Length: 453
Image 1 (cartoon, rainbow, N blue to C red):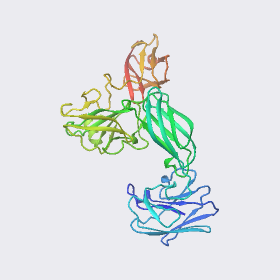
Image 2 (image 1 turned 90 degrees about the horizontal axis):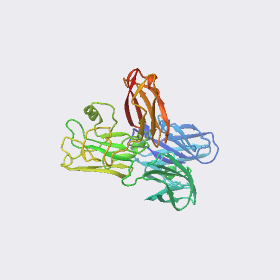
Image 3 (image 1 turned 90 degrees about the vertical axis):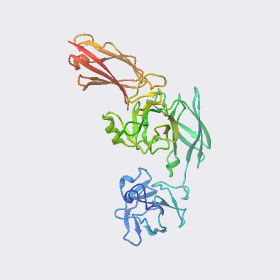
Image 4 (image 1 turned 180 degrees about the vertical axis):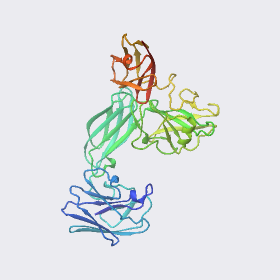
């Protein structure tokens, strides 16, 4: 049975976004044929073990799902300005439908087993329980989250569409170095959960997959005021021409955060795609003209993303940072905040122009992710070896650099290590100056060492 058509995508060319979805019954056949307006039909081998067949132009657009098979539309193009007639045949079973004229960006979803169609958002390869019959859809939602000192987050939610389910609860405490914690919990109806965290946390609730996966999980950042993992650390609302306006965003947590879920509230889209992230202790500059800003800065060692952020008022204004739909930081300024053309650091309340670099010290300043001690800053090629002790809640990378800054040795120090570690400066560096570099994520500190004869 035909269940969904998407004839007129608007975000991508039709050849990339069009699809036809067919719901399969449990019967045996060798082939399946799809025809449009009496044209020669497309032929497909009947997909064994699948309950849906998705016809697309590009196999890369096929979601990976055990119960889903995909086929290629080839030269077939779905009419996007008129109605059309479609025929489906497999063995002794057949289906025929008449589609109304499409609407741009809307999917045509069949209502039950009728000849009526609804214009809605596309759901390629998955069931639409609001329209299809006989779909088992167990869904979870999170209704409220409250932080309790010394305990963590108290969650309240609801499980619908089924009596009970075993859910996987995943928690990442953004204020600790323990990584993701996972446990299986039974859920039913209105439920409450307690998850431990020292402050802001990343929480996921995941149900076993079903025919309609859109509500099988909850993925939420729980942000404690004053404890957000990201912050606005520099604002340049009135730079010198031709430098474009920009703001700096800093990840002060120990974990990479997805750029797809960060944005300036009410100002343009996300900072990046689903595969992009802001590394631990990394800064990114946000501007509406990345090429112009790169040229104005004159150096490449800073990360820049381009967002349609509009204009920042030179006299008085504000900007807010959102993680998902939650505002986690905001900055306001007036003509008395800083004299133009200057940027300012909202953490310190003073003028600053250090793009991509976090200035240490001061109340509310970003903390360094490690402490270290060197046995000496001067070593002899024939004397005691250079040693270092590193204290951190997470793994620290050590590198030894020669006088030109080229890496000649590297090692990793595990979290919560209290041992002294030997650095082969005398054997790997020539007589003169070399450097020891320590880093966690994008945070790095470099210390000079002198090697004597």
